[in-house]
Amino acid sequence: MKRTFLITALLICCFLASFAAIADFSGLWTGTLKVETGEVYPLLYNFKIDGDKLTGTAKTPKGDLPIDDGKITGNDFKFTVTLGDMEIAHTGKFYADSIGVDIAVGDTKAHTTLLRKK
Image (cartoon, rainbow, N blue to C red; front, side):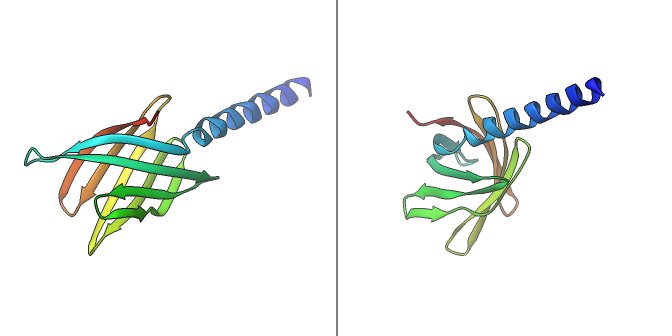
């Protein structure tokens, strides 16, 4: 009985610690995206996390765009941003001090790292 209780308590603590770590990713994150042509684009995201739902905005030269269809599974996430008629898919992973992001528009894909904006 004690062993079952101890294991259950340990699993609950691990789950809560994992959830708290993800909750820390709310806020501003910045980085740059270098595309195949050599152009470099600044990136700024304002993430808001509510349970397994990821929302917020992506700052672009055309203004702030909403994050759509955001979903978090463990430390992995996915969402889209729509710019005009372009749907830009984002997938990635939350790490302790950074976020790895794969960005895809059609067949064109790129990877970047975001850091918390200070």
